[in-house]
Amino acid sequence: MLRTNTRLPLVEPSQEGRPRTFKYFLGMLDSSGQESVIENLIVKLAGLPSIGRKTAQRLAYHLLSQESRSVLELAQALTEAKARVHGCPCCGNFTELDLCRICASDRRQKHLICVVEKPADILAFERSGTFTGVYHVLGGSISPLDGIGPDQLNFSGLWARTLGDRSGQARMGDEQALDNRVELILALNTNAEGEATATYIAQKLRGTPVKISRIARGIPMGSELEYIDELTVQRALEGRVQII
Ligand SMILES: [Zn+2]
Image 1 (spheres, protein in one colour):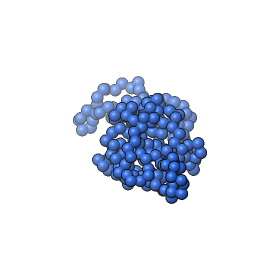
Image 2 (image 1 turned 60 degrees about the horizontal axis):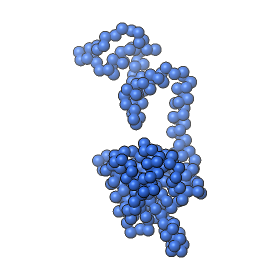
Image 3 (image 1 turned 120 degrees about the vertical axis):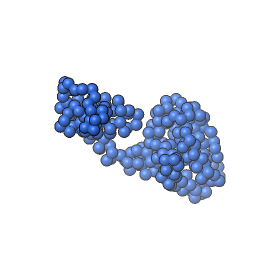
Image 4 (image 1 turned 30 degrees about the vertical axis):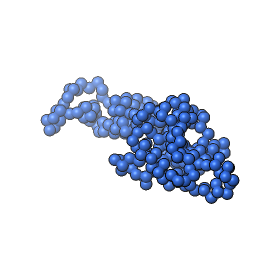
C-alpha cells in the first residue's frame, strides 16, 4: 500500500548527491519495491497513442483504486482481444472471423476498393454509412526515413486484388468489363508519407485497367483520417478526384 500520509521532503538527494527526479520521488513513497510496478504501469500506459505522462499517471492511479475484479476484467478483455483478433486475409481489417464482415458481405461492391493505412481508418468511412465498397489496409505508409518501404506494407495483397482477376474481366463483354473495372479510392493520410504512397500506387498501376482516385481535399492537411467527422469523410469520398 502507498503510505501517502508519510511526510517526505520534496527533493531528496540521491546517493550520488544529485537531486532525484519526480520519477524517483514517486518511488520514495514505498520502499517495498512496489514503486517500480506502478512506474512500469505508467510507462506502459504512456506508450499508448494520445496518452501523455500525466494522463497515464491518472489512469494508473484510477486502476489501482478499482476493485481487483474490474481490473482483471480489463486485463482479460485486452488479452482475449489480442489472442482472437487477427488481420482479415483479404483486406487486412481487424476481425475475429475467417473473413471480416465487410469482405464477407454480398451487398458490398467488390470492385470499389478504398485503400487506407490502418484498420482504425475504416471506422471513419463506416461511420458515414454511405460507402458501399470494400477496403484494403496497407498497414502504414511509405516512409524511407523510418525505414518503411513497399516491402513492409501489404502491397502484394493489393496487387492480387486489383490485377489478379484480369482474366475474369476479359471474359466479360467490353461494356460489362468497363462497369466492373476495379477502382482504388486512395484514402491515405494527408502528409508526405501519404503522398509518397499514393504516387507509388499510381506508378505501379499505370497502364493497367485499374482506375485510381483520391478522396477530395476536405480533409485538413496533416490530419489523421481516424479523427475526421463522418460528414467530412462522406464529402471527401463523394468529391474524389481521378488520378489514372
Ligand atoms: Zn476483410
